[in-house]
Image (cartoon, rainbow, N blue to C red; front, side, top):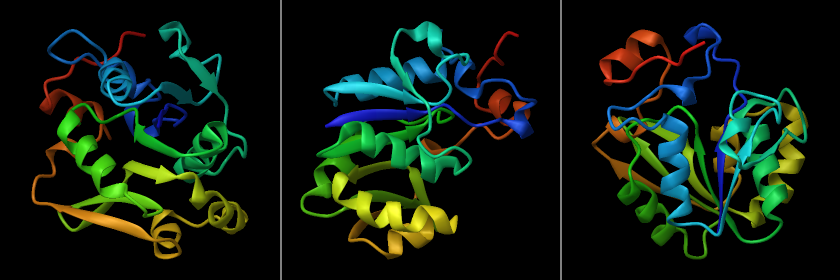
Length: 188
């Protein structure tokens, strides 16, 4: 299994700062935390985003979007293309409270499905998921239509796990949210 962290967002509501570089109370950045989670479960971890961006210093392979301008769905497409075969454990770079058991449950649930995802608080959480390469032909056909994850998930065999706990999926939308989660904003 391959791991991929999406690091290409513009972070408009975050003042353009790289959200994944917020510091957790343990001193690691959010993206370092996520890479550690993925390394414990995956053969290889890749960052999907601009190679000359703020995450280049991590020493990981950084792959630009193969189809620019498609947002996180395009990032998934790139991650699956890079993996070529087998599943990809995907997460966005702005999930400071994501922990191993959340990923482990998805990996276990994937089995023969095309994807394993969480629904928390009534909302699908596609930016924490395990996606099999079988999704590629469907995704490739849908990508020109600028569809979101909901449309993609309805077109494949996805298993959806339910969670009453929304904290693992809390993403860093604003600096105020980061502060409320005990994070220190990235230094510019």
